[in-house]
Image (cartoon, rainbow, N blue to C red; front, side, top):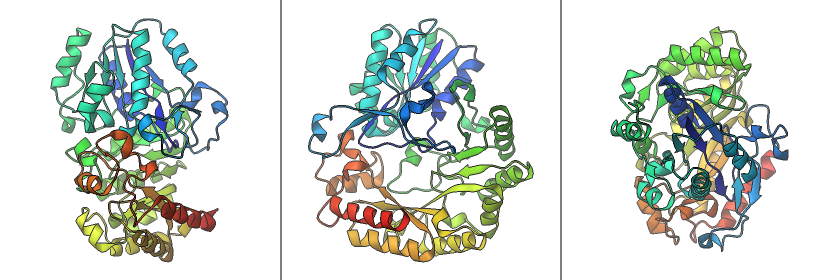
Length: 440
């Protein structure tokens, strides 16, 4: 039996914006295909309790997470916020481990944000108490971005930081069976996942691409997925329709980093969903690329049922746009907003991510972008900058921040890592209060 674990989140704040451990669900599918029994324990899954532990949830599939206040790490003791462990109570985790019918042959743990690593450490420490002889393998974002840190501090026996085929031999040695999990992605027409591993399917994941063709200086997508790969639109839609019928779910969440970049495939997917006659609510928490939203795509978005719309502008400063990767221009933004308005989308329905706290960014820059977005007829969504190891901007962030950004705990966007005299926590709070007054 293979045990898959999605660990707790340790942070000052966390929200379940359609989170799903797709990597583990993909591994679960592949392990099952090779004859293994698979068990997933998702420590962020509120469905372990029918009352969601008293937290507020939305019928769209997103919502708050249960939490328990825990002691702050010493390095964060001066941050005036409560530190929390988000996810199910520890006793439920232990109960799940004790209920396993057999000892796992291997345990695979995933990871997300680098600064969430205390959750990984705590999760693995409990697993080791119950299964001291079972190899624990760590993968995911933290393992890929900071493999040496993960090897030193996570407690995992093995840290997988790439998708190389050599990993098949590692698993083969552990499981005493020829394992084929890693290989040439181009051979696959669909990113297969097993939703049956979940306790409850609250929404359907749409993943039609992996990676991103852009080289934004603040983003790690290229480091996570060096090449940009698209899957078959027909198979993506067929899978969504089969899931919708099986689980009775009409909410679809887009997990692509660059869904709108392959406009041909995007149009095929949306057209086929429309032709199916099903009424869906589509959510895009991962920002869509503005430059590709022409009048046809805007019309398709309206017809297919886009419900939660998010785009990435980041900043209206044209010099920043060019120097950070040339992903979007102000003219791209204005054309996209015009096309969306013509299809009946209201300003409050069009969410635009604005980055705050960039290295050496001034508060006036954020205010200009905010006013630019509002005047154009869209709703700003402030996103605090998080320094990501391995990105070009990380080195600039290290020059700006008085925190030691080589320590992952200080990469947390909540603490405003690149605060300085030109942009302070008070400046950020002023902006948030202003937006709250507009939209509350």
